[in-house]
Length: 192
Image (tube, rainbow, N blue to C red; front, side):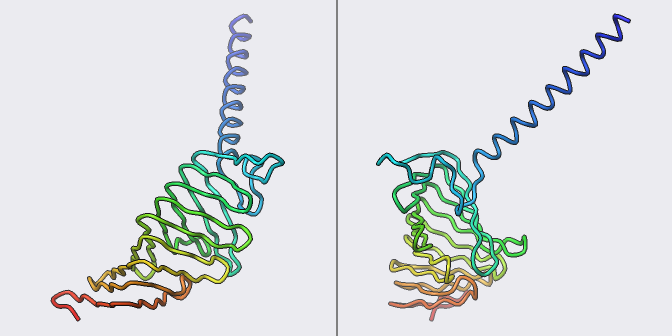
């Protein structure tokens, strides 16, 4: 009988321990994953003029065309109508499939304009078309799907072709880009 009570206590202890671990894991998950349209209290506009800062944040946003945008950042700071982020990784999904990966040293999301400004070693990787764009800064209208850059840009294709220019504008949804200013096309085995 004593042995049976000890076994029962052990089982109860194990079940409670597992329950605490599961609740802790769920709380940790909920503390770092947020929907941009429903910002966490720490990032919502408060009565004080001080900005809120969070570390290791993941924010989600549904785009008009049915895609989902996921923003990951090492740190996020909320201002009046903007969210500033450091060490940014943006991924765009359609129907659960990864379409784009965008990396940058820093970024700013302007809430009212639905525009992302990225700076510092910006890389846009089109997974489906196997194209990568690099530039120093990029403006991305997430509602219309257009991207713009007024700094030097390189577009690398899987076949080895590289397009170099001074500016870029294009559609992230269609994968069509216009490169302007001192444009060069470098083809494997020669340059044009």
